[in-house]
Length: 317
Ligand code: BDR
Image 1 (cartoon, rainbow, N blue to C red):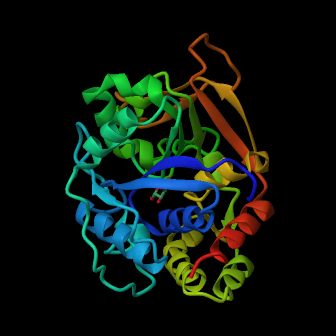
Image 2: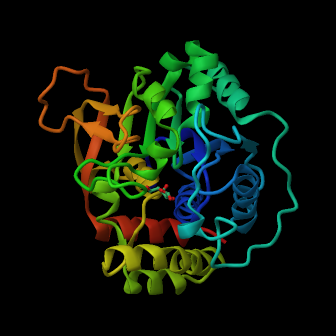
């Protein structure tokens, strides 16, 4: 991790235990990431919870210097769909984290994205999205001038070969706000998708969770407890030896891209289908001449992924 250039990032997130894992991974890689701010998103749970959960996680990691901004309380067009059935009634069940002493920043998440990109040099800021893309899409609609200045978007989003997890054909983050995903996909910004096709290879086996729980600090065991809670739903659903760990694929890809492999292809989102709303139609075999707008990650090395996560966790309090 050392020796690489530090990247300025904005995190879009709706914690969520796997988002907690991603945020802690990012904070553990403090030599690689400079977090300009976190935009809490309505997604896995209502916005009031995701704001609070972001603040709690920053206190856990002793990084309350990072500002948290509240994003939009709902998707652009549709009613909010949440995932308490996976993440629990607070979105971050499985561990008792202290109620935060800090407050969210007064500016809205959308205004923060616009202002930060406008003030930065072109290409300087990368957006790390662990949630529905609502706030980025709203920023792009309100301030189209920011699109060419964004260095890239790395998002946990979509599915093609693994089809869907919230419906038979849709991945949760895209399904919650397909209009937002569509705006982002057509923005011309360089995009990388970490879809279910790769996150379903990253299984939190009992051995991996035991190793995490044995990390000698607060963050490792706390994260292991959170993931033990959230994985019960997926273990039951898939019958695999562990639950997929989605969110940290985003920082892992940025830290060590050679853990992963994929292709530059077209990805379009279904916004009208009766049975396929929110489906990401990935032109993996390049059958159409639609523009290649996404680096679509299909495979990853789970051993190296968990090793990297653990290395980052060990650097935290
Ligand atoms: C995504 O859905 C959410 O419930 C998870 O936290 C992850 O962001 C996976 O489809």
